[in-house]
Length: 125
Image (tube, rainbow, N blue to C red; front, top):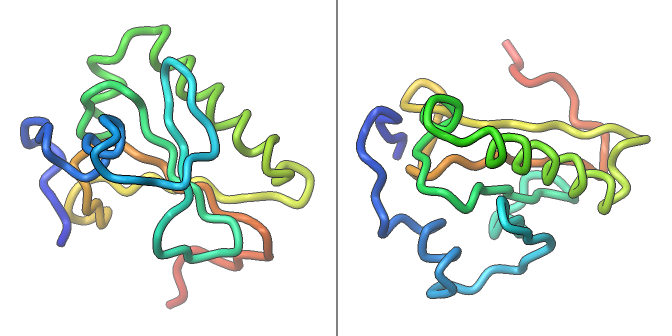
């Protein structure tokens, strides 16, 4: 169910619980700014979720309140994960769902990194 991205951060959301080690995840990358793990319901051969370690609900929240170091570290982590998974040359897709109309379901900023096959257009009409 989509969430309201303007709501306060919920420290009991699933990604916060993964960060605290309360819920297992198949981790593929971690540094001081980001954690990345395989999506439990992959939509492509490679489907990795990347989350900042800070308590941010959405991209808007992160861009307004995150420190320069957090923002740069998170963006660099996404690039490193793409390189580590050999996605740069064939290409890949990044997706961040924000709020109800964007289809955001977890109130913790996250980006989906998709790859491993041609992905086609975003919206079929």
